[in-house]
Image 1: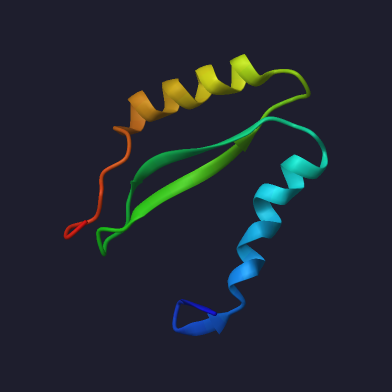
Image 2 (image 1 turned 120 degrees about the vertical axis):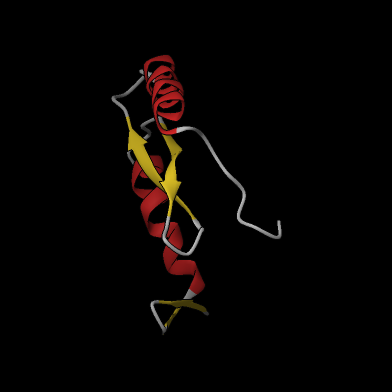
Length: 76
């Protein structure tokens, strides 16, 4: 179980979102876009069209440059 906004949820439920892209055989990437008010990293998943892996990776690279990339939370 994992606690989200004070409520317990099955940990495996997190696999649904990456699984959607994988099931459709589409390229996908997670991109850091900032930090929350509590200092935790925030990211988004981007999904591209079939066989557009390089385009998706270029978009992820551009987004990371625009938003500043991953910043580890304090204490990690």
